[in-house]
Length: 309
Image (cartoon, rainbow, N blue to C red; front, side):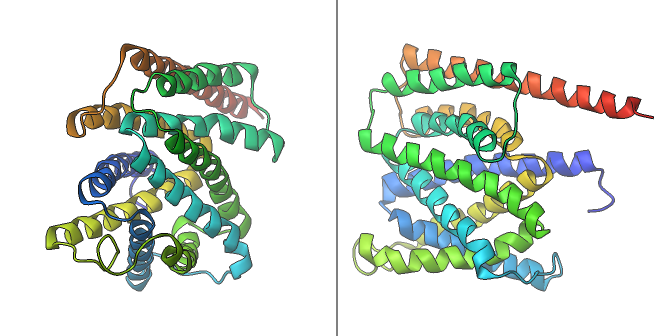
């Protein structure tokens, strides 16, 4: 795609991630609620199909694998497992609106990680925009009539692990000098092996409710489709973060919850109170303010570079 302008490639990557991310939320929720498909087993299917998709991509010459030591990829593989498992458990235990809005907390956590662990500084106005984001998430959770304490534990763990994962994705690509496909090519099978080992301790494997249970053909097709869409989500996450930044990816991602929230109300009859609506509006205002300040900062940096002799 070298003939496509950089802005066009970025826009295409963002659109693919947007469509795939929305589809995967609705499809996974349907598999959990309507079919009762086991969570960890579905995650394993996602990892396996992701690795198979990458294997086909490298066989077709889309990328050339780069030799990496397992120790270099292990932290990313562990965080990848936690990121997908905990976010799926959050989706299974919470309403779609609460699940999606809780993910907005990833941005403040990423800012905290980059500030404390990597010494990155953020202007005060950027930090202040995180206040309405956090307040809005709190209001939505507090007034959620389907509030689940266990669901909030999963959501919290999901936010923490997701934040670490997204920071490490960008750092590892620059540290190891690899692209998104090369890194995910090694990480996906490692994450699959980890889940393959722990699934028998938490979920049935054979029989009713197990991954090899008596599922209908339509259920199998939906699970495989979910895996294909998950591959598209995983690949686009790596590509977007590698070409922008973890925070940029999250700010783009927060707009997805507007569509998924509406879908949750229509498809799964998730209730939405006035106070929850205020929480959502508060979070959106914080997101818009953050985006405005980040764009202004980028334009200012470009102007300074252009003025240099």
